Amino acid sequence: MREGLIPTILGTVVSVAGASFSKNNMKKKTMLPMIEAGVVGFGLAHIVLGAIDLVEHRK
Image (cartoon, rainbow, N blue to C red; front, side, top):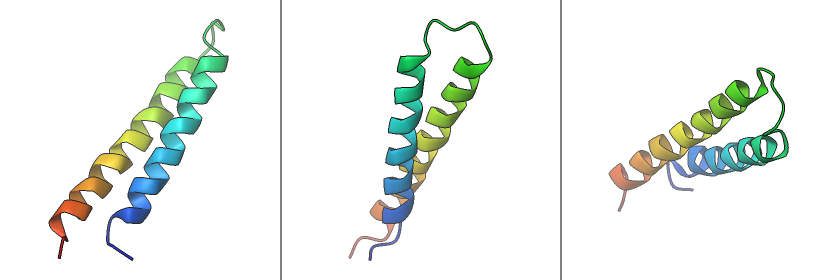
């Protein structure tokens, strides 16, 4: 298995989950939008770092 593939897949799953949560809770006036934005950012960071690993370790 290529190095960086697992973080990229994990980041995609986390980003999609965070985006779906924020879509459902857009009208609530709580701290949830900030938490959901953090989850999406965490996922996007994993996608970027995984993609960097994939590019660096090409054969």
